[in-house]
Length: 341
Ligand code: F6P
Image 1: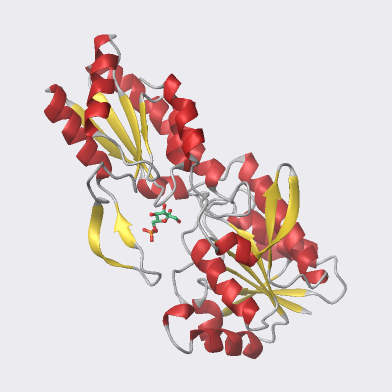
Image 2 (image 1 turned 180 degrees about the horizontal axis):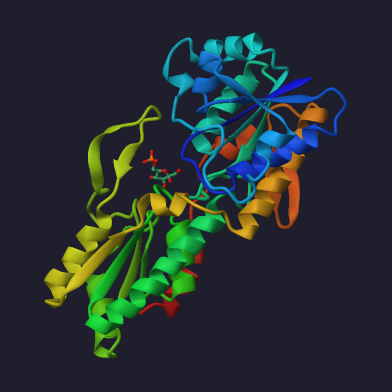
């Protein structure tokens, strides 16, 4: 049996751990081989493949990025996209496909499964906004990087008696902001799920400054001021229709500066959060997902995604994963407010 595998959408640390586990678990199945498709859904469409054997995934456990490359190619964006993916899989001689991705990539996998293509999904995205799983590959590393950034800006903010705003990723969900803000002891945490009041942020900063401390604000890139709109880095959208966010950190810093009259700075972490070495947690999670995805292939569990529930890896329908995004529940956001500035 030949199993194709691809990584689509934004890359993240831990993808190579998953690929390594897929290849090495498949090696213990009689007559199973793994074929890699390059750059997400572009791979099957262009039949752009590379063999994946035991040696190809050596020294990959601690490597960020994805050895297969990634892209935001969207087969659902063209009328014949799904048919072309299907034809590409056939041309490559694949009997099954493991798709590693977030909402967009797995949305395509779900559509393929609906057409009878034997596909299994593995969840990844630093944003952790995929439903039906507790955690996605890459999220833990992003939270760790953002937390370290908060720790680091704190000392310089204190030295200069100024507020610093840290902008983290999180298009529709504030998981990275919430968790790094909590872990780093931020004074305000702004998430996309809850429009924020500039006045409330100003009051918080004034209170923190009055205590002789430097205010630290963590803001998700998709956070919006009350009555306002998302701040865009540039116009235009990608193949999945997503705008490029970025700039809300500068906007909030300018507001704080205007309102308090003190000096402020903004730090945009951007793709630093998606790069470099995965944490031990993401290596283990990626590895477990890879192992269980091959088992799902062996069992013919088509149209399913491996997912984390508590400490167990389970199978869920792809439909449950892509139906709606997993956002920060209001009660989880509310419970941290007592700790903030
Ligand atoms: O993968 C999700 C994500 O990291 C979002 O948080 C962010 O908005 C987006 O990717 C950035 O994507 P790109 O790499 O295409 O700029």
